[in-house]
Image 1 (spheres, rainbow, N blue to C red):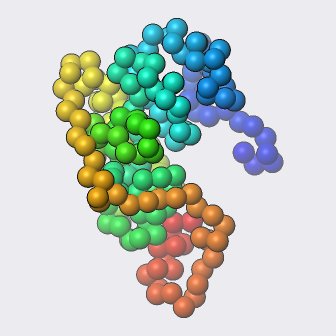
Image 2: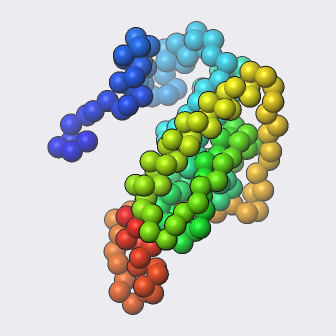
Length: 189
């Protein structure tokens, strides 16, 4: 946070309110942490905006692990899908719930929902909308898991695009670019 002061996320605050145990390992391969996770007897792990999980962790729950991703995979795999969708002037994006596999953002799609982008929406606004959409979609996914109603669909890897981390050079405006490109860049950052 501002002033380099650590702050709890909304998820952690809610977990604390309900007295849920919280684990914040510095190393996801720590044997003590893996043992704790095995002892939870979880059916499934749900991941959102987190680092790559080691295989030892993914295989613990009976149903594996799923990720909430802020794009219509296989489009915009990577750390900054919203930024890249806006930068590229996309007319829609969405949320994908998919099974986590070894390679980043490549697992089978479980559910997707589209979100229309207008020409003036910003990354922050899209983020807020997709967070709400993703929360609803992950609950639907979990309900479908209970009733075996999910039919995983393999991603069409040939259509994959990349959404790498944003760097400070991405913020630089090149005034010789088109007005549309500059407008998209301002909305994205």
